[in-house]
Length: 377
Image (cartoon, rainbow, N blue to C red; front, side, top):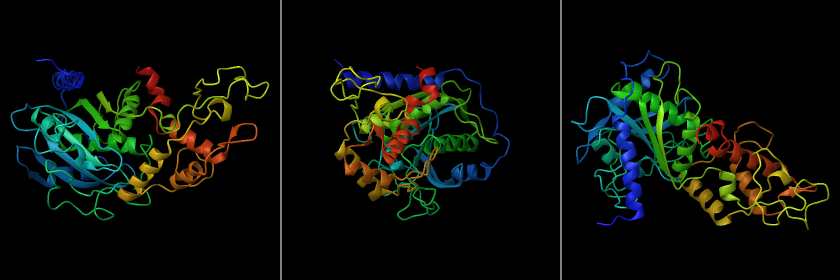
């Protein structure tokens, strides 16, 4: 039988994660010393239900590191799969929810979730953490293979449920200091709730919105002893990240092909004068104007994502004042993008709103600019 490239890719990924399940690592000790997270670890064991196919899912609303309620599911490894288990976090796409990678069979949708879902990993000895990302609602299962949330789960902030809970529980588009820490915090809570998790065998995977986070999580581990390190909670090491159709530079992904203008447009004395008219320029995320020019906005993408976010969640609406890392004014940023070019003021320096947007999307939401990105490559 001849395998397609996609099939070979799936075999390779499955092999990588199968290896994770048997890699030597220090066996986990009994639950870590009690800390702020310990009362919520019990909630991740309390409300559980068995589903067709043999999987058991436990569901709870638990506060994140900053107290924001998050809608969390844990799929337990099936019986007969060993005594010590790896943990994988499956991260959903933009506008979706925790159900995206959940399934009552290993087949799931028969496409990109075939043998890549909560059931398949539980069948192969994994704990699986799935949760609705901060700011998004949970609209329930969208396909017949997706399990419903076990009855009795605590109500969430905004109907119809999920993790949309203003003012803090808002969409931050995978901010390295917000959603990235949510995942690290929740993974540590799961490890506290289930002491048979090997803390040195953790993986993350996700598509699109979840793929962008997967890269950011990999960058967070690179160059650090621990990936998740919270007082009173188990310390975890991330061994594998499997991004699917992700971004590494969100600003460039949405506004690509910025260039300095070439010899006919660059003012005399600028370092880029005489450069190729079509050469791309990617500077540091806080490099203004000519050093890292804004490219062509993908208007349909940006507008579509914003509409999807407002339909299924709540965006953060921060200030346009200078800031380090949020809150972030997504609606104001969109209005400036929609107003169109020019995106720079006289002298070809970014106007304040576009400069803020670029610094945020590249510096706070993109793996490419994180210190661990180059260390880990």
